[in-house]
Length: 299
Image (cartoon, helix red, strand yellow):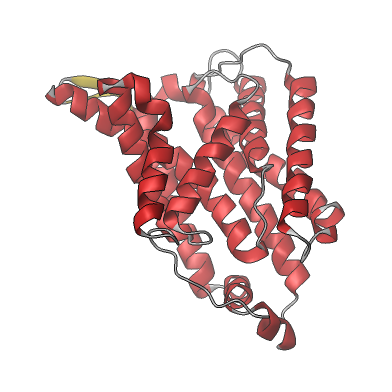
C-alpha cells in the first residue's frame, strides 16, 4: 500500500507539472485578454507532435543529446509561428464583442488546427521516448521511476513559475501587462499599447501550451484528440484556481494531479472525473476559485 501511494504521488507530481504549464498559459490569456481560448489545446498537441518529429530528425533513432533542445525549440516554433498570426488576423476582430462570439472563433481555430495536425503528422500514433530513455531511472522506496518525469518535468514547471514571477515583477513589459490586468482603461490613458500587450500575451500563452506538449511528448503516445482532452483539463485547473490567477494554477494543478493519480491506482473507474469533481467542490465553497476574488463590473 505504501508503494502504491508513493507511486501515485510521483505520477501526480509529473502530471501536475505538465498540466500547470498548459493551464498557466490559458490563465494568462484570459486574465489579460478576457478570452476563453478553446484553441489552447491545439497548441499543446502541435507542440507535442513538433517536438517528437524534430527530436527524431535531429537525433535519429539513437536518441542523442539534441533531443532536449528540440523540446524547447518545438515550443518556440509553434508559439512564434501561430501566436502572432492568430492574434493579429482573427482575435483582434472580436475584442470587446460578446463572449459567445469569442468562444466560437477560438473553437473554429481549434478545429482548423486539429485538421492541420492530421495533415502534417498523420493519424497513426507517434511515440518518441528518446529524452525519457536517455536519462534512465532512479529507485525511490523500492520503486523505479524515470529521471525525466521525477526531476526534469517538475524542474521545468518550477523554472516556468520563477520565470513568470520575475517577468511580471521586474521587467518593463511585465509591469505593463500587470497594468492592463488591473485597469485596462487607465493603462491605455497613460499610454500603454494594449494591442502590443495582447500580442505578447497570446504568443507567450501559446508557447507555454506548446512547451507543455513538447515536454509531455516523450511520456505518452501521441494520437489525434490529445488537444481536446488537454483543454478540458486546463479549464478545470484554471477555474478552480480563479480565472486569471497564474500562481494559483500551480496549486490547483498539483491538487488535481495528485487526486487523479491516486484514483488511477486505487479506484481507476472514477479517475477521469476527478478533475471536475475537485473543480466543482472548490467552486461550491469559493465561487471565484481558490485564489480568485469578486470584481466590480464597470458600466
